[in-house]
Amino acid sequence: MKEFAVELRDVVKKFITPEGNELNAVDHVDMQIRNGEFFSMLGSSGCGKTTSLRMIAGFEWPTEGEVYIEGKPMGHTPPFQRKVNTVFQSYALFQHMSVYQNVAFGLEMEGAQKEEIKKRVMRALEMVQLIGMENRRPKQLSGGQQQRVALARALVKTPDVLLLDEPLGALDLKLRKEMQLELKALQQQLGITFIYVTHDQEEALTMSDRIAVMSKGKVMQMGSPAEIYERPRNRFVAEFIGESNFLEGQIKSLSANEASVFIPALNAEVTGTPASEGLVHGEQVFVSIRPEKIHLTEHSARLNTFEGEITSTVYIGSNTHVVVHIGDVRLKVWEQNRISRLEPSSFYTIGQKVDLMLMPENTLVLKKD
Ligand SMILES: Nc1ncnc2c1ncn2[C@@H]1O[C@H](COP(=O)(O)OP(=O)(O)OP(=O)(O)O)[C@@H](O)[C@H]1O
Ligand SMILES: [Mg+2]
Image (cartoon, rainbow, N blue to C red; front, side):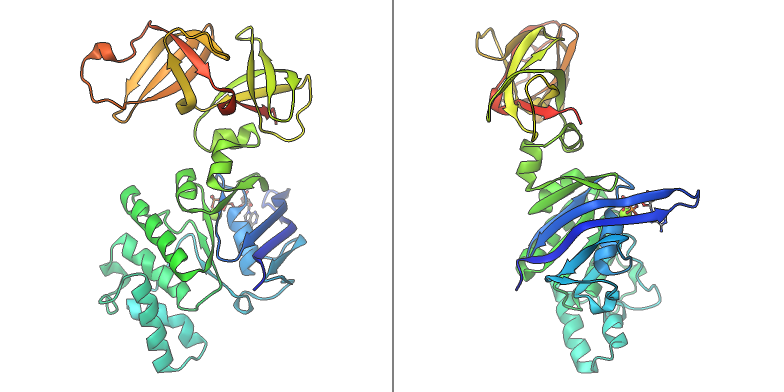
């Protein structure tokens, strides 16, 4: 077995829009997806996720570059000759057919034997826990159950690679969270490669071994959930995944693992960790720090510590969201409510002076674009 189940090498897909403009829906994308991996493409609407998936499936062909499956260049190989199967964005089940017939349909088209079909359909329904519902029509199922029929329909063909395009998009939040865990468990149990498309960052972080963050047809960063969240390579990724505070400034000193940035708005230098590639001395940059990583303390004289004033606090149960102003600079800080308490005086209050400590290892220095 090859290391990579699927590879995109320098793939471009151009469309001519109805307005007559040329659009690079996918713009020089490189991706290597390992065998057995849960890989997600994450990005906002229109960034090229579905188009990338359709090129892997063979419903579209690249304008430039090449898609490889198990190390073989796919060229114009039609979808049914590729060892991949797709669960589409809208999973359109056949409404007039039973669950069993929906799942069996693809195998019947291939001319498989009746006994063989029965064995495989029942096995697929077992995987998605729908045994006992074979004779129901899609309308007689819940949204999550219909989603599982769509999944069984793809799994019954025993693909090496399953392509899933926002398969949980139509479900409510609670069901979606349940299905996320079920899908992840199923993928681990079967050892199939999943290539999963979503615009939901939390979903991507929960399920994936690795994520490609996409924007305007390009891959902005590819890595494990922790790499993407803890070491975003630029402001776009830091902003798209989770929340962050950004301070603009200029690099005053730089080594491999430390950078000092002068922040005019603070009239002070902040020491941080270089996170973008190719940073240079004197460069205008952003310093990025996540709200949960700022420490609020009472008067300390440590490195990267600034005095500020609390201007807003919102209690949300597990956390309190605090806004602190240092002069005109506004920072979001999330404090975990580790102790159960009711007296208002035990919480931060508006107008209170606090010291903010930005630990250098949590303070990332990022390129401006
Ligand atoms: N057949 C087509 N002809 C012209 N433009 C297209 C075609 N298909 C897609 N596009 C354009 O290509 C870009 C990428 O579309 P794509 O469907 O890949 O986005 P997406 O990331 O899947 O978005 P969403 O999250 O909304 O599903 C969009 O700007 C879209 O309008
Ligand atoms: Mg799409």
